[in-house]
Image (cartoon, rainbow over the protein chains, first blue to last red):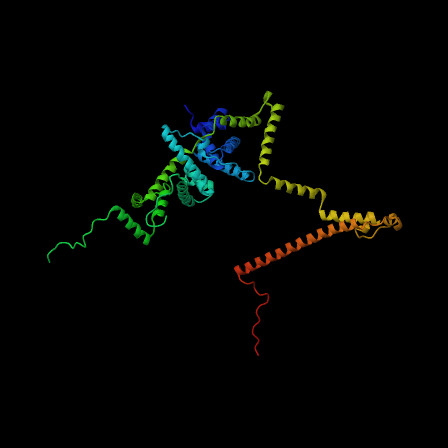
Length: 196
Length: 269
């Protein structure tokens, strides 16, 4: 039996160490994924994810209610990741590592063949994602990977909702073009009625 | 008028699919151009921008006939699945233990209580260590730490030692006084008191003036004065220029300033 998120949050507020451990276990994959999306490096991502949890722990009295906790967690993790990148920019930049080299995704695929195919596809999309502009990448990370609503993305990026919509469309087109460019099968077929 | 057999020149076989596609492509190329861009936008805008039934049907018809857009649709669909699977990545076995260790250190500091509820000395020391390490790490991680340190050091030096120009002047005056036998009053160009005149050594007893040292000090002082004068002049000039710009903008916005004297009526002869 697993405890529901509101109960875990309430117990964390009360200082229950077991509830805190349960919360870390429940959201470690998510926070680590955000950290990796921004740093592009598993070691940096691990350190950053730990820092994010330590900061969460220090501010546990200010957590929002359970219904808004996940978007808040994603947005806070994003802010801390951007801070981390800003600090790292002033120093050496770490080498980026492709997702399939070390990642163990929690979304399970049963069939081994499917697993291999899904891994290849994921690796390709990950590489394409790393080649996007910063803004497009952020939009895809928040909207398509972490599933934030348009309002939440707008709030996190501090831009109007209409801009989020148009940017999301453009970012997906950009991502598809990068996937085509990286694809080993070659370029995209020609379109109808003139230039592509 | 009776119907006769159709002229064989007018008898045509129906167009093949490839010919139809080629013709559609040719017409589009000479008219509106490719519709693929519009189709891409519609496909990439899902689900944020829902399509009407008519738009959906038109899009489906386009995709059914366009290889490029079919490929695009497949890539977008696969990318969605792949991106959704990246939502959670397992960070490894030791991750939770690492987080719990770091947060338990904080916990020990925040709620550390020894015998009868008082924090023990060891807990206090351990807590301060944790806090100091965290503060140190945050400070070291600041991107402009070296610049900030240099700025603070400069401010401290100026506050403790004083203005470098004044120091140079003082040094020059002292050098003159010590080597030429002049008093502090002479060096600072004020009339000497009787006491100072009596204390002044006879001119013959003074050593020869080492002119190089004095010249060096004077050069430093004059250079500094020249520099400060130039900077001051530049600041004044830029300030005047800014005031002119503001005045000009003000005139542009609110019209020319009123004349100081009322216009004189024309003189009648």
